[in-house]
Amino acid sequence: MVRAVVLSTARLVPRLVGKSVQNSKQILPAATCLLCHETRRDYHVQRGNLPFGGAVQLKTSSSSSGLMYARYLTTMAHKDIVFRQLFDGTSFTFTYLLADAKTKDAIIIDPVIEQVERDVRLVQDMGLNLLYALNTHVHADHITGSGEIKKRIPGCRSVIAEPQASADIHIKHGDRLKFGQFEIECRSTPGHTNGCMTYVWHQKGMAFTGDALLIRGCGRTDFQQGSSEALYDSVHGQIFSLPEDTALFPAHDYKGMTMTTVGEEKMLNPRLTKPKMDFVKIMKDLNLPYPKQIDKALPANMVCGVYDIKAAAI
Image (cartoon, rainbow, N blue to C red; front, side):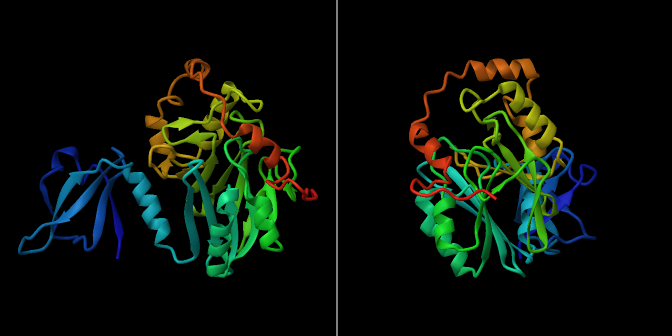
């Protein structure tokens, strides 16, 4: 059984790293990591071969923060949800499948058209009832799979915030979408585009940030009505205002990372920890190349990723 044990600096201090920790009152069976809230550092555990069996060896982890482990391991231990993080290696896009394990009601976030068969097969294999296919924004680097998923799964409805894009449901800030006993809150986070949404799963301490906030970065702001000022305000007002142990899942990552936390990004994000005017200058000086897929992706994503038919907006 995998466990995460949360400690405070009163019980775990930096000088203990690399030394044996003996606690006769509390044995830590099967623990995989120790977490320190105050320092936001995490430690991998190695079981000591001592007679009393109550010692562990601590080693600093080079991975992400302990807060991430705490929330992630605790959430994954729950048997009431289905959570899958899927990846498209061409566009470096994450797709997320969330479901109520009891009712089987599910939603999918940011599907990619080349991965539709994979996603539909997973939904069917797990016996899920896919209610919504959501996009965090009109993507410029890949074509959404929402329209093709709707063809294969009757009853699934497409969801987006951009009012000019074809979809079954156009959401706005503050809307909530329910699936089984759960719901996600829609938070408007413009800046990368003017129609970006962050989806917050308060019940599980998760948020899906699209391109607004990436791991140690953020989405570009030089096209699609982007605004560095708006993005800074969105992240600080709508994402950094969440509890610090909220697990954040972006739409992309290019360096092999999969998740982060609010507290981690507030402390370590090299762009968004700066004052607003410094952030604006950083974004202005990026000089990024023209997106390779934008001329193909944008027109397709305005019609739900399907060229020949348009979904009727409800």
